[in-house]
Image 1 (spheres, rainbow, N blue to C red):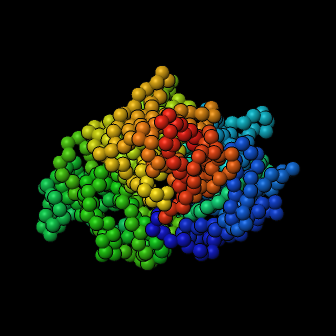
Image 2 (cartoon, rainbow, N blue to C red):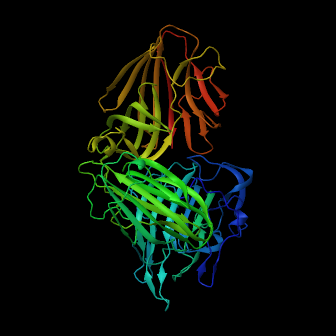
Image 3 (cartoon, rainbow, N blue to C red):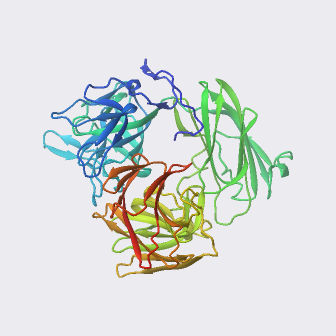
Length: 614
């Protein structure tokens, strides 16, 4: 995983020289000339815009950063990197028009498919995110290949994201293959769609028919238009540093802080090959202090990740890298990055845990550095991933499903939320206190393990599809003037939450009254499950003229004509059913832009209707 603490290093690209991979940090392609030769039919631009109904991009803007392969009357050349790779972590964003087709080939041999698979109910290895099949020339049939776990494709003309962790095939000194190439992880729009999938040979239409330890990145250019941006990668190949002279000190007892045992005599001392909490002293009421020397073979930035169930702290070269703190199985690892010079670097790790019946401790320490993938410094028995809390998936199979719970929205835990899952995979979450949708997502519905397993302390429901976060502020507000800032919340004294009612299709209509405005809010799938349409019905009972509806809040809102808007330069679309709403404005704010319309002062009920297309 890329560390947010790592800087962008614009050092020369590393090549394989004499069979040894020179280390490098994360390489970010900001100018495509850094990637390799650009075919004449491809062009570098600063912006690109598409539409879900168009077979080509609508427009491009001058600049750099985005590489576009436009439509061609005949098959065009592929884009091939000017460097080769073995083990690699690769990220990129891509955009395709309606019906288009491309692919990313690792080592020029193993393809992750790019395709317009938007809204497809059943996917195969030829769909977006699929590991494309191989082809047998004798039988003229495809074989192997792997479909993505779920279809999380966005609409044509929207930016999508791949993250690929790949291991190259390995060969012995006689050149015989001893290990297959492997897609360790593939994420599509932040959803894990492949894990530990081996590939026995080059997939269809690869650059090469043989297998080698190294090869270039290839992006297919002969099947249809595609745009690529934000490509970044990290090459691996160097061994992880080892800890030499590793010792441990064991303290028996129930401890609340480091001071209670650190300066006292140890109950037991000894030597270890790898860090391990499981040394035969039970699963609670203990403390361990591990000390050794980390052998750094190359100077550079090193990222340490600490996963634990208990209290832990990490010290590198005599400095506190991760302070003493409690960690729990459901939390993300704590990470920190430090610059280390070549040589022997002192390392100390402290771990302690009190009584917690039925829950085994966990202690895992990982290191990542120049040319080094995230590697464990602990014994396999000390930390076992995914065993502490298994997921509890809830899916809408035959009819919509409504579920109440807490939901993380940005940095905030929303406590009055309802989520609706649809059998067609168009899902959303709604904040009952604000009368507004918080997020929409495509694919799986929810993982409810954080609120249903054991004590369910967090009460969180976790979306399992490709999510688009929405602004999350109130939909309706009272503004002194058109220039007034939109509020973050609604006054509890003026808000009456009336819950929701289910119709015959088991879809909810959310109801509330704010001041003298009565609101009904309804959502349903549209466009064969490719969009979510919102129908907001209100009655301005006091006929006040200072109430507004905020339809959209985003960093950027670009009108595309006929009531359609492109949001955040390609994150999703919004389409108004009635393009011309009286008094509608797009106004600029410190955070971006807002699409607003004043409430009608008519005594009759009014409706605002629009679709979110993603």
